[in-house]
Length: 228
Figure (cartoon, one colour):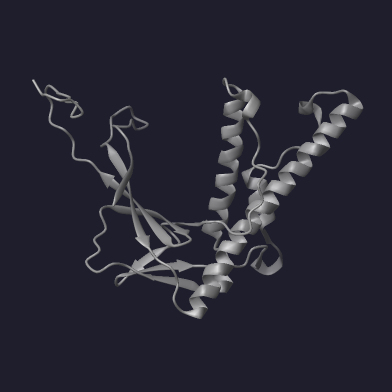
């Protein structure tokens, strides 16, 4: 297991401190062995790369429209009638609901949770660029422009399931991936999400840390020659 992040005590809406938590990542080496599982594995990663690439192209096209409009009219971008699509707009575009309650997905090999995860990651990349522009490295701040053929797939706790020593990753029309967990595998905490990568699967858990007793806290640096 790999401890990826540890947070201190947070505050609730009422102002009372909550118990500190850790997010622990467990990495399992895995690749599908059967041809049917390989097809599902390839289809979901291909759709993940496809949705990312299409968002990159749509975002870049709207930015060019804004630049051309501002150059022609000599007005600020805030007045441009074409706005950059945000997360809700991308979600409506990724799966559109039509008559009789039927939902038509543009990416049928991804479940709705994985589709939303790809959109959220793209939006976070754009927000990181905006924050970088306000800092000292504004010259190197760029929007995501790289198109991908394949991409990692993220499954939320509502989509991925662990049953009888197996991890089940649904992918709508493509099928379900079945990952056999190591013998003696014990979940360290509350399951949060699973990440499907080439050659490995990562499981992210939320672990509550026991509250420390009140009193003095002493810190020791172990990277020294002698300890006093």
